[in-house]
Image (cartoon, rainbow, N blue to C red; front, side, top):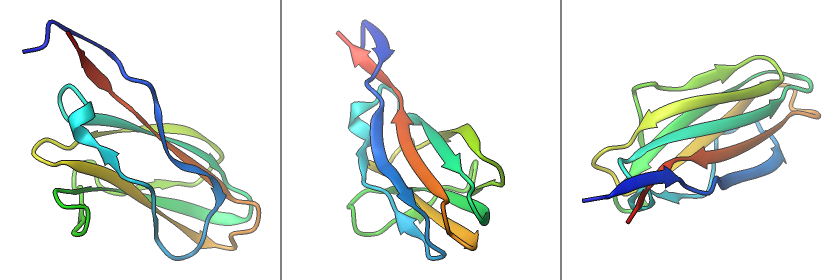
Length: 121
């Protein structure tokens, strides 16, 4: 049982990179790091020539089979900016997100960071 909790160090799961029109997965984030298996996915998006980007949170227990998280489900960003997406991952071991651009990908970039609470003993 935790005595208290504190904010964990933000974990970069996708470095700033040009988007593609195919879904590309971020690196995995181990959920045992978190206090309660909730994460806040921070998306830093530069739209460039894209129409939008679709970000889909996913969970897995084995790192091979991934399932889309239906609540909140996929987030569609249509303008440059930073958004946070709270995601409940209770009962799972790993988290990641996929990103897929639509339209012309020139000069469009996305960075994904996981923010979370961790147990502090």
